[in-house]
Image 1: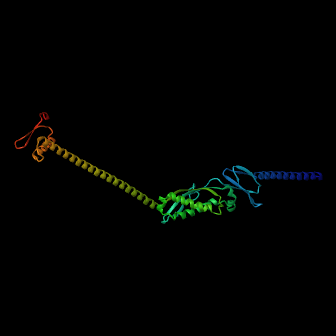
Image 2: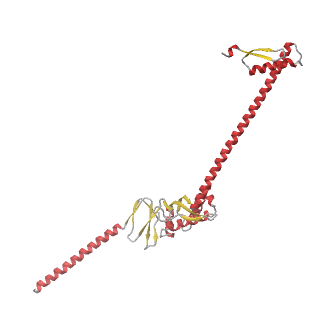
Length: 322
């Protein structure tokens, strides 16, 4: 190879290497530009707020509520924070995927262990999101703070109620738990007053199996006692009604007897008066009473003949028999 060809070869090689370098630089710049552009845009979904944390200036922006898009510098960190209704569920043994935490085990005033299942709901005050994030940049207010307060306050509340009271006063126990948890949450400096629209639901109070069986037996016994008392009252009412009926019938019979006696007396007086007899003529009165009695015991007798010795002779009606 002569000198001219050698110089030409070296020139072409140098130009080729430079061209490759330019192409690589252009590609890198394009990728950098794309990444830079894409990292400038942040989507903020419904129910979320985004705060921008700038590590260079050490500042945190005011929250931006979704749904929207915002732009930022590539080195600025966009922190998504849920401000819509959030929930903690506590039930089960820790393996239930529908619960955030297992049931809360606590003791009653009479030292019986109970399992408390609860659901807690809340929202975040968007005006307090910055303070909350500055206090808890790891965003663990749900997992560590609220859940811990709930467990603590429920255990404090249940120790003031006997087991039977947690059954008989369930609504009051639930309200007491709710008030205790909310009081602690709303005054917690760490939470910065950011929790609003607080709701508490007492889902269930679980008791040991032996206690549950004893309660069921007690309820059955109470129901049987109530039924027995009811039946006893029915018997008493019926007996009272029967006694009153007998009393009324006896009074009615007594009145009827008095009325009948008065009527008989008046009849005898009329008979004596018609016969021109005196009031002490007992024979005529006896005869009248005899006739009345015979009329009652033998209503089919049409004729009565008195024998000389005073014995009455009854003559039956011919139409009374065949």
